[in-house]
Image (tube, rainbow, N blue to C red; front, side, top):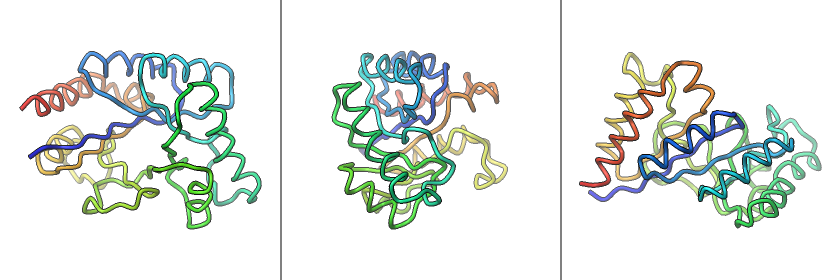
Amino acid sequence: MEKTYLITWDDFSPLNLKLARLLRQYDLEAIFFIECDKDYKIEQIKMLADLGFEIGSHTIHHPQDLKRLSKIDAWCEIADSRRILQEVTKQTIDWFCYPRGRYNEKIIDMVRQAGYKYARTTKIYNDNNNDENLTISGGVHCFQRQEYGKVDWLDFAKNFIKENKIVRIWGHAWEIEKNNDWDKLKELFEFIRNFKLK
């Protein structure tokens, strides 16, 4: 069964560059969603784009909840971040990621009006692979979640890869560091690479 992979990483972290090197080591593509409110974050975004990674918008300031902002402020976070990222990366920014996965129909409509083709949520699993383009699930979060029960996230991810045609993986570099999960992430990347070579 031929598989489609979508690997995405959220938030600024100095460790994103370590993560990028690891992805390259295993010949894996990924989209980085990084807020763009500081010069040092913009510099990292440029570096990741120069390394050939796709960049998606995670707003300008990563607000806790876009739904709680005024219409003008929400629009600025969504639309201006796309404009800034396109100027900085020289890429067409097609992807948006809802901060903390919080959105409603008004926010989805703004994302559409701002010109994004796709938007990722923080929902896990694949929703039967029938997601709307602007509410795409994250798939498997590289983090121990209660939804996995007693199954370790790495084992959950491996089983998910085996059983699904569309495979989505997401996480945060800072979570990997906090939980000392770099070896587990390497094992996951090796597993994905081997599966892709079959």
